[in-house]
Image (cartoon, rainbow, N blue to C red; front, side):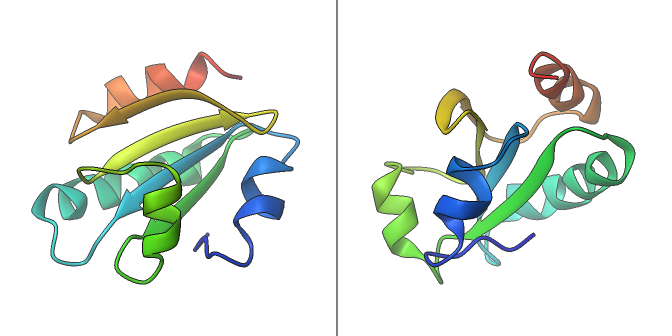
Length: 102
């Protein structure tokens, strides 16, 4: 799901399920590496919402969450940031991080 300045609060902060937010940009090489991994996990995992924030389109969200490098991933649960990590990683590593919040 594309997250925007308009839908971020309702889609992420008010969500009943954990949410993985991927802060990314078109020009970012590591973001392009992670995109298919995130998409595969989105299709394979139930109980987690997957969302993406294009930092070029929504710099206000990047500033709000102090995003200094991309890709940056944040896991939200109950409206709070539970975990934050940056850079590329294997599908298995990302799955393990997400499973901890199910």
